[in-house]
Length: 321
Image 1 (cartoon, rainbow, N blue to C red):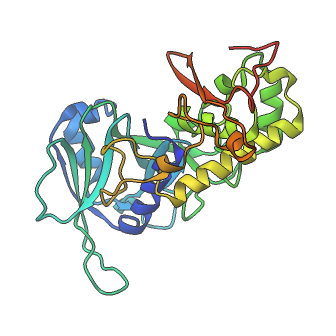
Image 2 (cartoon, helix red, strand yellow):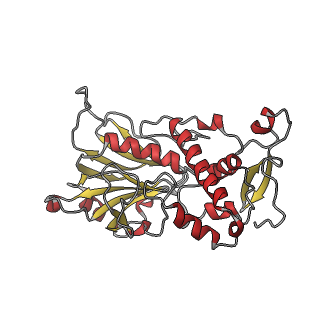
Image 3 (spheres, rainbow, N blue to C red):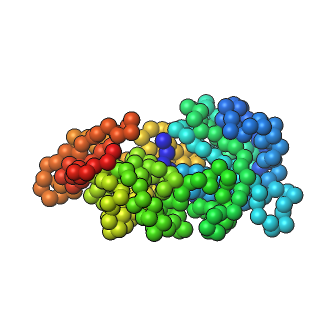
């Protein structure tokens, strides 16, 4: 499933190609991809057509487009947002209308004409493509954020968040992320550190891949008890999360198959730089630099896999799973 860096790559692309444009047409080719919009395709179309995309916002792995309605063009705050959940295989692609439809095209939005800085025309369509149909798009009401800060990482900093995302904590790349709040809530839990940072209500955007990478970088075992975490250890982990995510962003995200792409259909290549995830029985790079031959191990964890180095990340005696 795409994690924060992959969704942020999409957000940046949409901000470049879609922000500020008006939705002039809506075509729903598969209503399963709008199942979270309970009123159906006609209502979705009626609410979207004529609205302008005010911004593109991301909090954790949640992505939304605040919409300026024609009847609310007086500078007031947007009231609605188009939320996009990518699921396991969802893609948001900007395409010219002459391009053939993708095999798994589910929703097509036609956009008002716009030009690049060099005068060339921008693609006329935003397409939602989803092979496995675990994702989807739907409309959501916007409400003020609880802390008064921007809803998430965005271009305009609107202090609004969709009702459906109010339970999602801020992510480590969010300027409004509070380490003190994170650490206080972390210490109040009695669980293992990996299980904790996978909880989107504590800190968002961290999935299995980047959890393993950050824990490796911070030299912490995934079963390290949260209630005994020292402040310096937690700070080291948060910085490791930021570092690995920023490096993944620089590489365009992590793509293990052709489904994880940006808005132009290009795959990321951070998978080539992974130190732990997916490297079972390969040498630990940190140990190798010290002349040691330590193999990365894989353990079953929460019905998936967890990768770690048995030397760099020793299992604690009071481990919590």
